[in-house]
Image (cartoon, rainbow, N blue to C red; front, side, top):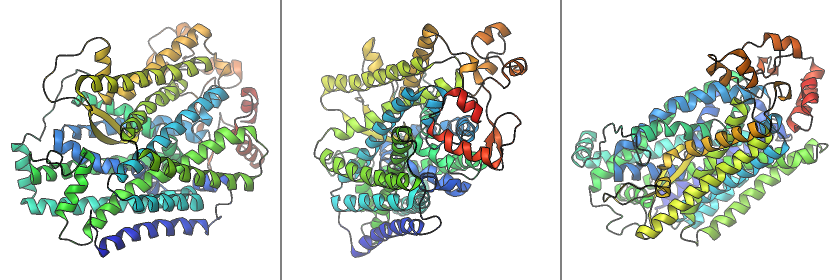
Length: 615
C-alpha cells in the first residue's frame, strides 16, 4: 500500500478529530468525575447519537472487509440477512430494553444477580470479558495484515486516550463521527468503481452473467452454509445476542434519557443496518464487475479473502489522491468504534460486577478514577496482545471462532432468566457451562475435521451487526470445498452445521439444560423472584393450560389473587418510569426513597427481601 501526502493528512485528521471529541467531553460538563457520567453518560443521551453508536459498535473493520468479499465469492445470498433485522431489533426494543432500563442497572450482568445470584453474575461477566477481548484481537490482527503497524499503534493509543478521558459520552459521539466517515468511504469506492465499470447497470449485468445474483434458496438443510432460513431465522438469534444482551449495546440503551428514546434508537438502527448491508453488497458486486473470475487471491496479489477489498480500493482509487486515505480512514473508523466500545464496556463490567460488590463503601471519586484506569489498562493490554498474536498465523481463525461461539450461550442465559420464572441459579450455571462446552466442541471439532480432510481451510470472514455473536458482530466459518461432497452423518453432521445456526443452537442448549436442571433441583417459586426481573411471555404463550398447571410452572397470567396474597404482583415487570424513575405497583417514590434505590440497587448486595423492601 502506498499513500500520498493527502492520504496521510486525511487519515491523521480522523485520529485528531476522534481525540478532540474525547478531550472536549473530558473537560466539559461534569468532567467525568462520577461513575454515572463516565460509564453511562449521565443517562442523558438522545435517540439519534445512541442509534448511530449502536450501528457503529460492531460495524468493524472486519465487517467492511468481509461483506464485499463474501458477495464477490458467493453472490448475493448473504443479502437475505437483512430479513433477520426486523425481529432481531423488535424483540430487544420491547422485551430486553424495558426490563434492563426499568431496573436502572449499570451493567447487564447486574440483572443476573437480581434474577439468580452472585455466582451467575460472575460467570456471565467473565464470559463477556473473554468475548470482548477476542473482538479487539480480531480487529487489530485483521488490520495488521496490511503492513500498517504504525497506524494500528496510533489507532489503539488514540482509542485508549479518548475512551479513558471522555467516557461513554465521548465514545458515543466519536461513533457518530466515525459512522459518517464509514459511509463516506464506502460510497466513494462504490461510485468510482461503478463509473469505471461502465455504470451500475453494467455492474448488475456482469454480476448476473457471472451467477452472482442469487435467488431465494429455501433449502431447510441446516448444514447448508447460506440459505434463506439460515440467514433470516438463524440471523435473528445473532441479532438478539448483539442487540439484546451484549453489554456494549445495553450500556447505550441505559445511557438514554428515557426508556422511550432507548426503544426508538432500536427502530432507527433498522434502516441504517439495511443501508450498511446494501453498501457492502454493492461493493462486492462492483469488485466482481472489475475482476470477474480473475480473483486477486487466485493470482497471488493478496493472501487472504479479507485483503481483497483493500487491494480493490487501491487499484480503483490509485489515480485519485486522497480517496485511498478516506477509505483507510473508513476502515479504521470501524475498528475504532468497536474497540472503544469494547474498552468502555470491559471497564464497566469489571468495576460494577467484579470490584464494587466487594468494596461497596468505595468513594465515588476513587471508583471513577479506577474506572478510567481500567479503560486505560484494557487498552494497553489488548494492544500488546494484538502485537504478539499477529506473529501467530492461525490466531485470527481461532479468535473469530471464539467470538462466534460465546454470544449464543450468553443469550441463552439471559433468556433462561427472563422468560422462565421457575429457572433457578443452579440450572443457570449448569446451562451456561453446557452451552459453552457445546459451542467449543462444535467449533473446535469443525476446525479439526476440516484440517484432517483437506489441509488448511480457507478463512472466510463474514460480519454482521451481531456479534455478537455478535457483536456485529463478527462471525466466521471455514469454507468447505466447492466440489460436491457426500452428506455428513453422525458427529460429522454436527461439525458441518452452518455457522449461522451457532447462536440459536448454543442458546437453546443453555435454556434446555438450565430448565431440566432447575426442575430436578427444585424450581423457584414466585415469592423467590425479584420483582421486575421476569418478562411473563411464557405464561402468555401457555394460556391454553389449566390454571393449576400454569401455577406449577410459575406462569399464571391472572395475577390478582396472588397479588392480594403476597401484597404485590409475584413477578411483574417494573412499571414505566415516572419522571425518569422506575417503580413497582402504584407507589410514587419520594426523593429520599429514590436516592436510596440508586445507592442500593446497582450494587446488588441486598437479599431479595431487602431489595423488595427498598423498592
